Image (cartoon, rainbow, N blue to C red; front, side, top):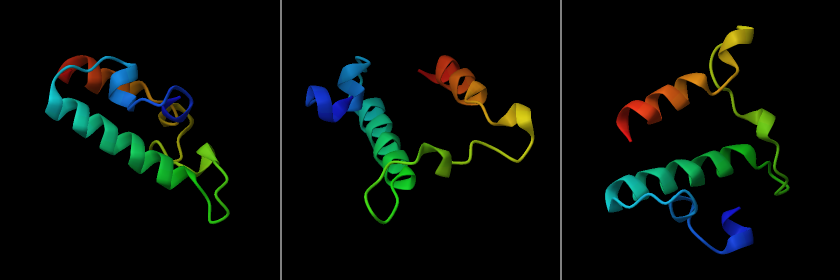
Length: 70
């Protein structure tokens, strides 16, 4: 979305605190790099969200963390 709208991820979700916005943008950049293969193709399944248990392959824990700390 950032490329499409030519905005930082933190701007898209309206994070006002500068440091929090910086951290969010860093994570977004890191995840994008982790999901991109050597040929520049995005493959989001390359990112592991937890261990191999079925229930841990969601972003539930990430959402809970963000709700608590943001």
